[in-house]
Length: 155
Image (cartoon, rainbow, N blue to C red; front, side, top):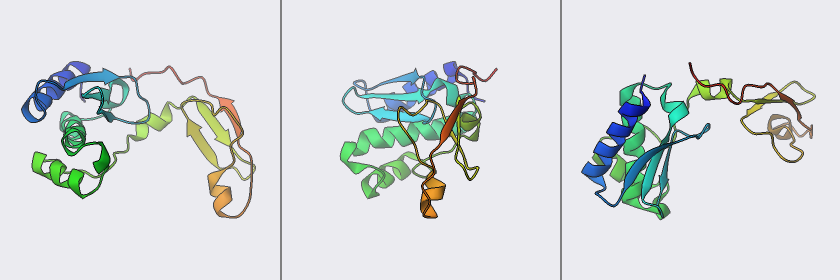
């Protein structure tokens, strides 16, 4: 599993190699995405919380994914220009990565009348309707329960 120290060193190394000195790398506290390219700040970040669930090579792939965004620019999204940059860097993954453990720590559990479950890290501010029921043509509101897990970190 990747440590914060290893992730910082890998991020700084990969950014220096591929993006240059005007870009920086850091860690953030995201709970639902592993990496992010902040174009205006010329900074790439990874989630301290989520990288702890991943192997070193997986974290390196995430950093390469974000470096490809930095090289391709904000308009590229996950399109052909970004894919070409990502492959040239040695990135082997897709547009997104799932970290199932992230869902386990979701503080808020929502359920609809049909029993569908929705997990969220933050309580939605307004009324939410079940997406699964909506696909079936029904409109069922979601009731939220605080599971008290929002501040748990991997120990």
